[in-house]
Length: 458
Image (tube, rainbow, N blue to C red; front, side):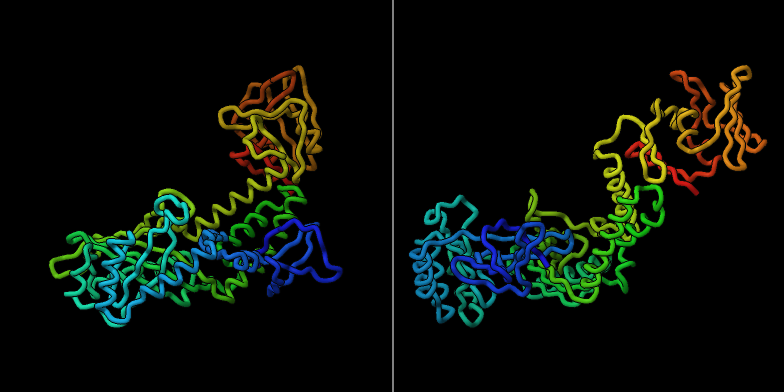
């Protein structure tokens, strides 16, 4: 349920009433208090105020359309005008169309069985060009005869029924395959032609696309958006802080409930799609010339190309990978306390941040750390032979030995080549962190975007 937080100053003792413009509204879900805020269904509030609410599942957004209020006088004027102009015959429709175009500055679009007339009300409402509200439809009953259509001062070229059918068939096939790629199962698809035009062999048409779909998965756990999060929890349990782990787990549980509803109940979608193409000499649509565009109401330019290969829709594997990476960043942001890329390396042990006396650093792609500091944090026994410049580290049954300046070390008396030799830095002995961690029984992960090393006790 979509809700909006509204500040309120009055509360009923038991039940919160929702009153808009003096009229009590009774939504299907009653208003409720949450964290000292009044939560109400936004759809009920918006529609009561004359707005329209649409849910866009493809980008999980709520879009609210508001309309320019008209004065009572203007509203009555338009109603009377609408009645006066309503034709009763095709001939009368054409005659009134000509009067509107010449005397009322009206934009006219002719379609089979209907003339759509939009009055330019900019002057009346004080609007800028291009923002005039739609006036409505004047129908003439039967299809207008061709000889009457040609009497209009600006003739609109009408595409043949066959061309429109081909365009609709192409668009329908594209949308069905697009929804399948997105993991949706189409339950219903309705295409409505709202405009058309041609320039020689080139044509274009705009369709309203209304659909209902289900998520095409048996369980929420199989949805890539959730599957990637579950994979993150499984792989990073113990690496991140307990608080971050619990928070991520609770979020996943809430998502599972939400997506179960999308699996069980169809989701409505609405958009407008423009199709462009060329005709052959027989007025057949050349499929290889067709191009599709989504109308994007939230950005500029307003047309968004729809590629033939559906590359605008990530594959399930890509969604899982993207979600996995987002989860890592979110968890580390909470642990580090910053969303910016750190300037130095941060080390965590079992989700807790370590604070070495001398900060670790990166050299030739390897993280080097003070052995004195990391051995203290990992509870590894550390001894140094100053004469031989040799270091010995022991934990449980593991024995590590390395020598300053040499790239060969020994683990349980077996020789091992280091990524970088041990060296002195600011009075401390530094060596590759991965070598020390893995040789003493710890799991290790490196998160490059955050310059973070995550250690976990095995």
